[in-house]
Length: 337
Ligand SMILES: [Zn+2]
Image 1 (tube, rainbow, N blue to C red):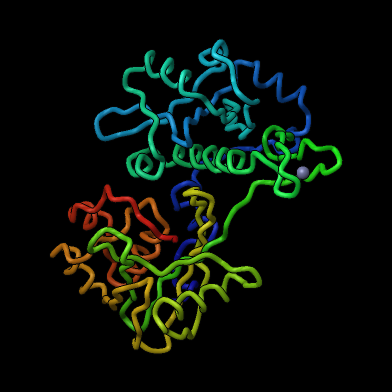
Image 2 (image 1 turned 90 degrees about the vertical axis):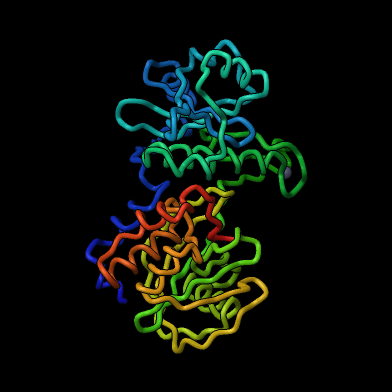
């Protein structure tokens, strides 16, 4: 399949991936204006996205999860360990991410009996895409702040600036500045003729088959990484590569860059990482899912989107109902390492 075969443009394709669906003005021009940030935080429009131990606060109702945003008054009296980080505005509200401690968590949950702090990777399977995007953005920033509490050069504590988007070493002689980190990774569906290649990684749940993926290494372009990963994991050489779409993947800090690639042949060799590899036509994939021999990653992942879009191109069918019927809907995917 070539990129031209897809009927929607690349921007729209990325927007279809979960965690990209939040439409926020990130207000970057105001981040370095503490007075402006303080006024917004004290205004009626402010909403806080709380994180406790990197878990997101959700209202659980039956099978569905709904993000909970707090007004500053709801948390204000309990105090914050560090200033809220500005996320942006959706036109109605201005959102900030805040880190809360064990005591604050208990107090919050006592007033909201259906609220839970949940792992976004699992919770996002059954939640509104817009809120999943907000929580993913909050989680990614929070993770970066937490993992870079100390300067990587001199070891002094870092302090937050720019409304939470810049860390600066508190040692004035050092003063090193650092910015949110993202690890780029490629994820690729390899095809040859009518078939696509899926692999099983020994660390995944049984019968889970997915696309090939891996981190981009220093000195590589995204395309170089696709070629290397496919050869490392399957010993397959590629004829063509097409970029498809991308997805923020805050587990913990990746940006997944999705590709289709055409193999030069169907000959492959399994690797230490991919312990089983199989070519599937659309019909074979249908049958394998129906017989529960194959379980695909959940639809929140770009891995699933790559497979589902290929499948729709191949036979006009929709994979989501098949995956739901096969009982693998709730299993967390693992499209990266
Ligand atoms: Zn330093």
